[in-house]
Length: 155
Image (cartoon, rainbow, N blue to C red; front, side, top):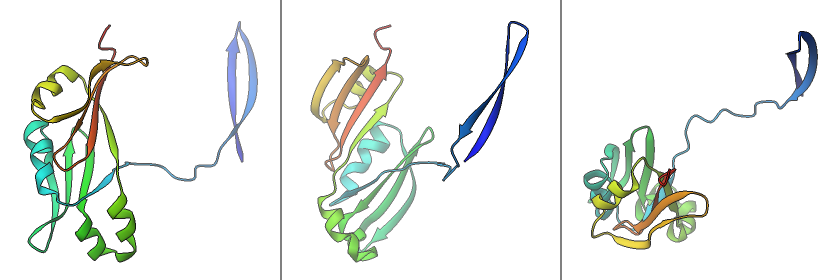
């Protein structure tokens, strides 16, 4: 373990501290969820037409999509069909078939998002939480539960 020396100037006097520093194991550049679904196509309009994400990559599998990357404002998510995942990497089969994720998306204006999602199944109606967020959870047409939250909405 290395140490970092910190010089403090307080009241005209200098003081030096030696503070232990953890070794850097890895630097994270991005964390992107891969969500396994039976079919990707039903979910695309939810993300692209309603929320403005762009399809930046896609891989066909048989006569359907096997994989897609969606991006918006530096945020990225991936969908992969269970069949495509099993064909690509058979040991992944059991995981892909029972995998489930809930996404939590912080937004600037949750009310505007709610308007864009009119008609989508609501899992948890709009509410203000004890941790200061105004939030809404919905189910995308492919089954993914997505929560949208705005912090400081009441300020």
